Amino acid sequence: MATTQQAMATGSRSASGLGFAALSAMSFGLSGALAKGLLDAGWTPGAAVAVRILVAAAVLVVPAALALRGRWGLLRPNAGLVLAYGLVAVAGCQLAYFNAVEHMQVGVALLIEYTAPVAVVGWLWLRHGQRPGPLTVVGGAVAAAGLVLVLDLVSGADLSALGVLWALGAMVGAATYFVLSAHEGNGLPPIVLAAAGLVLGATALLVAGAVGVVPMHVSAARVEYAGTEVAWWVPVLGLGVVTAALAYVTGIAASRRLGSRLASFAALLEVLFALVFAWLLLDELPRGIQFLGGALVLTGVVVVKLGEREVAPAPPVEPLV
Image (cartoon, rainbow, N blue to C red; front, side, top):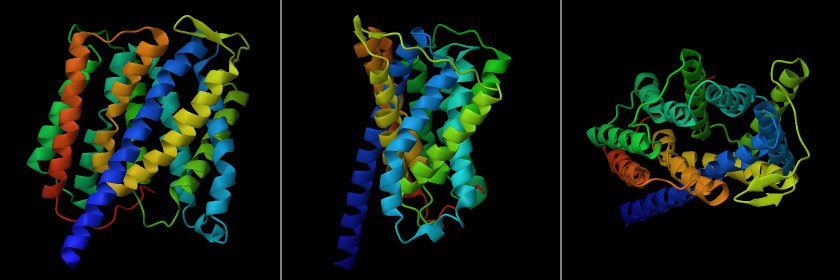
């Protein structure tokens, strides 16, 4: 009976984790289409990222403070974790990606960033001895093949050495996000880790903008989506509330239920949602080969999920710092 109840609890936790992962992927997937409108209206990438993180931090600070009430002592021993999360997983990852797309095609940069699941599997294997099973390897390969089709890279793409380096930096940031998000032993509620990381990330970006490292320029011009113009603050709120605050909190919740390996593969769904939102908001209709790639990505995620059963239990994942 106890075994049956434990299996049901595990299944329920896994199902809720996949739900959180899908919601997080959908929220993150909206960011590209919303940001594209702002960039076309005269915003710089640094300004769009900074405002996005600032709005998200403002939304989460009060709920995070309430969640941490009476447990403020948890912040001091987790200072290194929060610092790495805010600077690397939040600010660093986003800045590296935007710098990458300045030097290369967006699809190529996104594909390089989404090799993060491979980095996560390698990290867990080398650092914690969690050797991936055959199904995990097969699922990863299938998902990678699907991404190539989704991003329409079969016709070839120009590569920039500098762009590749920036995209690899974004990949490191994404892998760090999954590994740090999955660590449950710190006692920090997901909303607290997200809020603290966003505050630190926003602070770092503002300092970088103040000293001129990151160009910052905003515009009050109206922003156009699919032939409809909206005020600039509409996509700004969407970026901050939906694609950052909601996305990071649900992403952490998903990682803690699924583990960093499966959560990183489930996050590949972000690419599919990004295509859908680009179609709806920017009139960029995906091609048939991209839909085929999407089916492969979904298949790969399912195979990776099955492969999780082959991995022997391992000690809780420690933070990178």
